[in-house]
Image 1 (cartoon, rainbow, N blue to C red):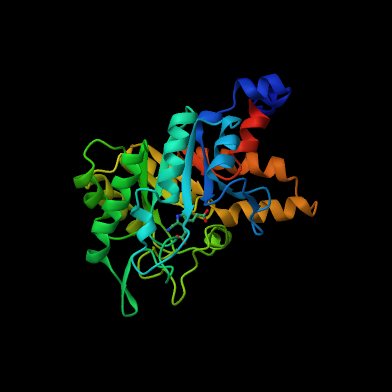
Image 2: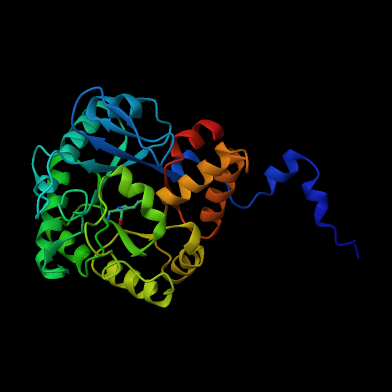
Length: 312
Ligand code: PBG
């Protein structure tokens, strides 16, 4: 019997790449963008070095040289109000951006469907007293999604974590692919995003609608419900602290599965990389590989632009 020797295939880079089980491709990445009103705006986001709030003209310019095929858009409105009315306005910032991108680039355009960036209280739905009213929020989410699709969006991503939000959107949009933020946890790792999108809640937190970090069985129930309501792709968010949930979801449902490598995950690696405490580039590639290895088909990540440049 030959000697057990697993090092034989590690000897050279060519051998290692020949037998590599999990690889990264630009086709598996989605780049998130924050779009705001104005012209010529490219405003750095303090807690996410390398990321910017962009006006529509700058967004188009940036995406023209982007080497990943898909983007997801988040909007920063001119004005916030109790019902987040810019969220579903025909000339809202995301709607304008979608129109420009669909006419001037060939990218797949996904939109985030939520209310927190647009409401003055910063919660993801309609607030009554101190609580977020699930039933009252659903028609708004459907309306936001419809306005995105009317502008030309290829796919919508409801992220508000209201019960039955996928059903409400599916009823309004029978033919639109839905990327469901199915298992979205109430996470500290969204901190930098709230800076970027100017969307922190003014009171309380999101733990009455986003999931408790300890719950993986419940994540399976959330995903199951979203699929029954008509989701096409399910997503786990954040990614890194929830790789077990990604793995279980993929094994159990066998459906297209995404993971969101969120703002705080990006910021941590970036911060340590800038201090020279870790090799930032290697860490990003290792993390994205691990998220794919856990079972996700594709990854939403702020590193998408640079990773596509490194690997293509
Ligand atoms: C909107 C939304 C959030 C994120 C994506 N969509 C913020 C939140 O739920 O507070 C977070 C993304 C990130 O941290 O990168 N509800």
